[in-house]
Amino acid sequence: MAQLTVDIGGRPGVNCRGFCEYCYFKHVKETRPFGCRHCPPYQVGCDYCSRSVREYYQGWKTLREVGEDTLASLQMMTADLGRITISGGGDPSCYPEFTDLIELLSGMEVPLHIGYTSGKGFDEVAIADFLIDHGLSEVSFTVFSVDPRKRKRYMHDPTPEVSLRILERLCEEIDVFGAAVVLPGVNDGKYLEDTCSWLEERGAKGLILMRFANTTRQGLILGNAPVIRGHRIQTPGEFRDLVTDLAGRYSLKISGTPLWDPALGSPFAIRDEPDLLDKLPRLERSATVITGSIAAPAIQAILDARGGGVRVVAPEKEIACLITRDDLLELDLSVTDDPVIIPGRAFVHDRDAASALSRDGIQRAVLRGPEMLTADAETSMGMDRNGVLLMELEGFSDLIRLINRYGRER
Ligand code: SF4
Image 1 (cartoon, rainbow, N blue to C red):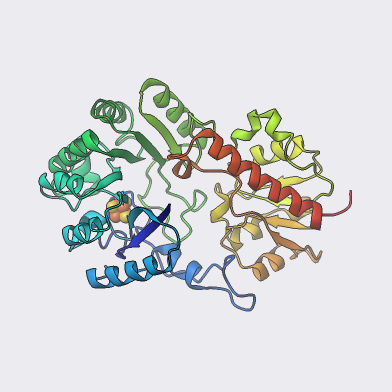
Image 2 (image 1 turned 45 degrees about the horizontal axis):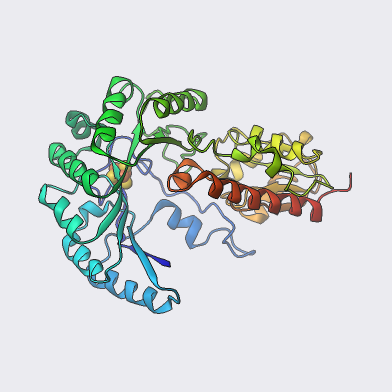
């Protein structure tokens, strides 16, 4: 069964009734294109790394445009349509023709899924039954806190009580995954426990907690750090402990992005599966692998288990997919052997990576690694452990094959 994603456009913050205080798109500046895996060899910057990454839409697409795009996508489809996901840069609940959009899509008679909404645009409780009656089967809903005053103050939701009643009604009938950026000192502690209990009692399927990012090191690469000046952040360890603790106390699935899904033991669940580790190819050559500082110890351990000889190094940047040229310039090249494998999705052009990693006068070949080695908690929310393990098996097999093909003789 095929899935169709319906993109309604919109700009984060602008088409959300104003920015939530913690929104990662707040203060985004015009930065020069980063370069990425999609860029042509002769040019740094393409549509993906200069526009899509900042969800740079002009504004909402009209209903007519959405209809035409949907029709075009359907015509390209060869398999039967199994589900439709509504997504965009803006918040779908704020889409001006939202009810017409739902009526249009419900005519296709497949389950609807709203990929993300904060509910800030919903002002009438009746919208919940409208959505249920028109085939909505799953929604990811940013709850932030079940204390309406917190929603009002930090999300700028004009009708927080209504939004929570809508969320409650949806929990009764369809699959609801709550989401909350954890703002230390604001919606954590007792407030977060209340939110977990509230969602559990009402039958939500899960809650994904997002670690608040306020620095470039954590991944704010669009010139927009800090999001909230002086606001405290949690270390990866503190956040992981919080997620583990809550996941053990509530029956709904609780996971944390970017780093921890306690129910699945991921990312890098394969570390605890000796039989699966044995299925990975053995390392025959060596190379340097660059990744984010959170993933580095796990990747090093897995590669060591397959023969070792590969050095995994990380800049301060915590997340591999958000590594830029500046991070490569920060690396100590005296511990960087040839060839160097950079993360498949790093925001750096191949040419820039080669010059940054040869700036000490030693030419190093630069290769791009697999796009994903594991599933972060956002990806794993709807997966089971076997699905994550399969993804890791494929990702690490590809990485080891790349090293064995292009690496240095040992
Ligand atoms: S609803 Fe989401 S995208 Fe819009 S401002 Fe809030 S956090 Fe940003």
